[in-house]
Image 1: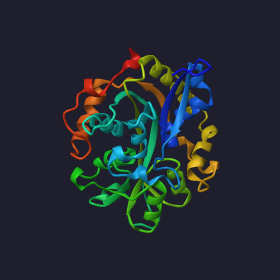
Image 2: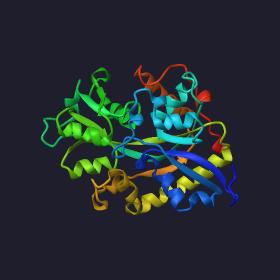
Image 3: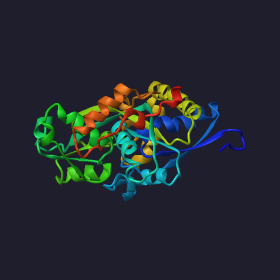
Length: 305
């Protein structure tokens, strides 16, 4: 659809500021308009917002808010952690959902941290053998936790649990209801401000997904705008702290946000090598993804053709 100003309209989903910051900055700095696009961002609750919609935490991923919005056609395009996008694109059709393809790798390199209470007896990753870590199932905190702990604990001894949103799982850790949890910004900074203990952390990559309705030229224009936004964020991350303050709702001040954790990169094509490595890693955990997927059936790099 084309707007009155001659711009092509695209509706995209946004869940959490840290994952979607390049999208927000590209819109608010006019970078999408520079590419001939009118990008409408539809906010669907994620785990980072205080008081997030409970639908965002459903165990069945296609029942969650963002997935439901995409399946109904309310949005054209979305992004999540690389593994979450892989799961959704691989399993959508067999689950009777609207199909999607991986169309890019990037642009948010979101940092996740495993955090314990300050007065706990947990000091190192090895101590989490058979100890459940609070995560968002089949989202970035879940997959990154597995990746982080694999270097210290056998896969069969890595345990996770659903303890709700970032705010709820931080409360659960403070009360001793769970030993530790996985967090992203602004909740890592909230935890630090409140005196929690960071055990380990790492950046992890997002992927972009789209239905067949968005043509390659439109996606390429979106990704050029996100690339420019990524550079702006990296050059001055503090300028964009207000997006995180909106999610934390008074639990954090701009000066408390650890902006050095914010890292963004230009979206790039999703390669066969990347697909093979990521998909085969996920198959190592039977619950993470169904078998039988192919690069040709899952990935469409039309933005780079």
